[in-house]
Length: 126
Image (cartoon, rainbow, N blue to C red; front, side, top):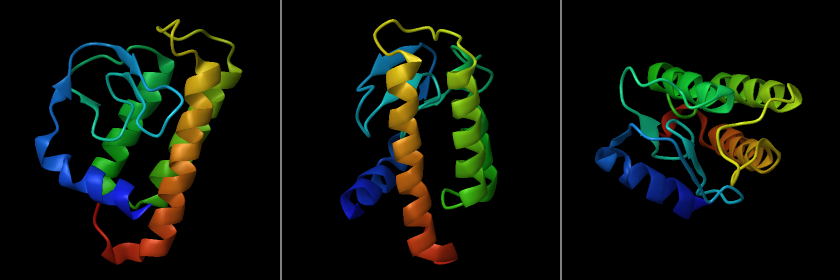
């Protein structure tokens, strides 16, 4: 768990924004989906989300940008958003990374983020 925090926090200074829709590592913690989903993966300002799932990630990025990476409310709202998208029956932009794979991966990632946020309290900055 600590390595995940360290690797994501050390790479924050090197984040480049995305202008293309990608679908990689869809069943791992290293998922990159759309332009906004994934640790260290974010769309460029003004870029439109690739689909409804990516839009949830864009909203989450904005939330943690304003309130911090350990803000549990941001993570809970994100989980609610992606579960709603999954239940909608819509199909995402990627055939290789369907919602049935991407959403459970993201839920697990958020559960981990919530756990780490609870353990860290307000003092840890990611």
